[in-house]
Image: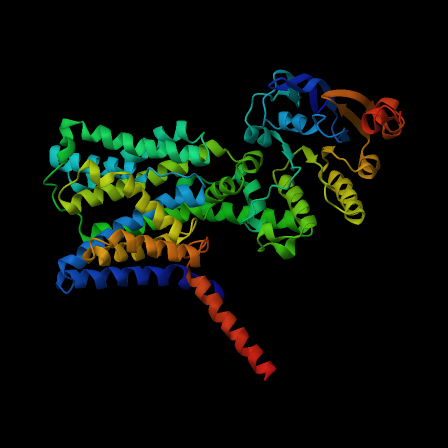
Length: 327
Length: 255
C-alpha cells in the first residue's frame, strides 16, 4: 500500500506540480516584464517547435514512416486558424479546434494514398505534398496569395501555448504508451511481422499520420496568432527539414528527446541570428558534431523520466555498497 | 470438415511458376510437414496461406470459409499464426512487449480510452500484461521479460517467435524452418517443444523444415514439393523410400 501511494505520488502528483510551477514561474516572468520581448519570441518559438517535433516524432520515430511534409500540415492549420479569426470573426478557441481538425483530416486524405509507399518513396511523396500546399496557398486570392494574411490578432498567449504543449505531449505520450502505440512501434520494427501478428498496419499508419498532422495544424494556428502575419514561404520545405532535424537530433522515437532538441535548436538558431553570414554554417556544424558524437540522437529511443532518475539513484546506491565491500 | 483445405492453388511470379496446382488438407490436431529442395515453393505456400501474397487461382478454406483475398491481419484474427524463416522479432521492443503486440488484436479499449487513461485502459493493459507474462512463463522466457528481444541468443529468439505466434491464440500454427541454424541438441529440444505445444494448446501444426531428423521425428504426414508441384505425400516411412523424393533431393544419378 505504501509503495502504491509512493508510485502514485511519483507518477502523477510530482509532474503535475512541476508543470504548474513551470507555468506560473514563466507567467510571472512575462507579466512582470522581466522577460524582454526578444526572449519571449524565443520562448514562444520553442513551444511551437516542441509541438511540431513531438507530433512528427509520432509519425517518423514511432511508426517509422519517413514523412518530410510536416510544414504542409502546419500551414494548413495556420491558414485555417487565421481565416477563422480574421475573415470569419470566430473566437480563438474555434480557430484552434478548426485548425486541429482540418489538418488532421488533411493527414487522413494524404495518408491513405501515400502510406502505401515506403522509405524514400514516402519521403518524396510527403515532400511533394508540402510543396503542393504551399503553391496552392500562393495562388488563392482569398488568403492573400504571396502576400499572405496580415493583421492576425495576437491571441496566442502563454496560457494557450503552454496548455497546447502540455496537451500535445500528454496525448501523444499516452497514445504511444498503450497497446495502440505498441502496434505502431511494431510497424516500425517489422511491418510484415506486425501485420501477421494481427495488427491492421494500414489503419495504424494512417491513424498515427493524422494525429501527427492534427497537432502540426495546432502548432500552425498558434504560430499564426503570435506573429501577426503568415505567408506561404513561412512553410516551405526548409521548415519541414527544421522539424525533421529536431526529431533526428533528439532521437527518433523519444518524445523527451524531441522536446530537448526543439529547445536546444531553437535557442542555437536564435543565438546565431547575430552572425548572419555564418549562421547556417555554424548551425550545420553543430548538427554534424552532435551526429558524430551521438548518431542515435540525444536520447536514442529512451525517455527521460522520473523512473529513470530513480534508477540512476538506485544504481548509485548499489555502487556505493559495492565500493564499501571492495574496500 | 478439414481445418485447412487448399484446392488447386496456383501462383506465378512473372514467368516463374512458384506453385502449380497445390492441393493440401489439414485435419484438426494434425502435425504435418512440408518439405522440398530450395526454391520448391514451400515458403510461397505459407505466404499464400497467411495472406502475404494473393494466389492467381485456387481456393484456401479455413474452417470451411474462404480466406484467400483477405488481409494478413484478418487471417491472423481467424486463427492462423506463423513464424518466419529468418527470425522477424520487433528487435527494439522488450521480450514482454513483443508478445503484448500479439495480444493487440483483442485489445479491450479504444484510442480515446488510451489518451484519456480511462479505467478500461488500465484494465485492458493489466490483462494483456498478465496473459503475455503467462505465455512467456510457459515458454521459459519469464526471466527475460525486460530484455531487448534483439539481444537474446539465437535459440531463445526462435522460442520467443513461437511464443509470440502462440499469443495470437491460433488454431493453426505455421512454422517456417524452425530449426534453421540450430545444433542437433537444440533441434532435439525444439522437437520436444513442438510436440508439447500441440498437446498443451490442442493445436494443428504445419511446418517447413530442411532438417530431416526433425521432420521424420515429429510429423505424422508429409508433403513433398519440387518445382512448385507436390511430388509425394504420405507417412514419413513412405516418403523416406519414395524414389521420386530421393531423386528430387539427390539428383537423378543417385536414384
